[in-house]
Length: 150
Ligand code: CA2
Image (cartoon, rainbow, N blue to C red; front, side, top):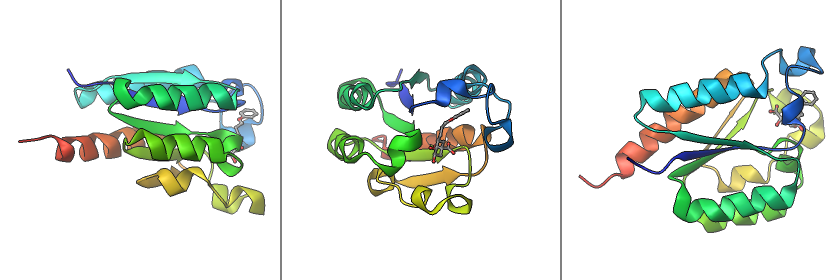
């Protein structure tokens, strides 16, 4: 069994489904966890799904992933646009990274158009709501299958 995919969620995503449904929809983070775990299973993989409101905790989880995960899917939420610490941790971990956003950040305020996370990511998926996590798992599964020695 390969190492799990680490699925990281940043600040305020624990509020999903309870506030601002016009932007983020009515799906809760627990719903997304279930979707991600089910999707990983279809690829013979597992998902280690986490959320934190704290930048340092996210950095520590990324550091730990080096030996405990096969790849990272990250919605760093507001830290996407501010955190060099998360970028540095992602660059250092040496794992494939897929960046996800529920909303289309390019249709929103100018300050959301820049992502530090993107510099460490193989690809970015945004604007597809909860489905974006499933798309990210498919993309990562494809990357991991190609990286496997024959
Ligand atoms: O679209 C995304 O997934 C974002 O990463 C969400 C972040 C935002 O800062 C990014 O620019 C784009 C915000 C997450 C906050 O989630 C909430 C959910 C419900 C109610 C309030 C906030």
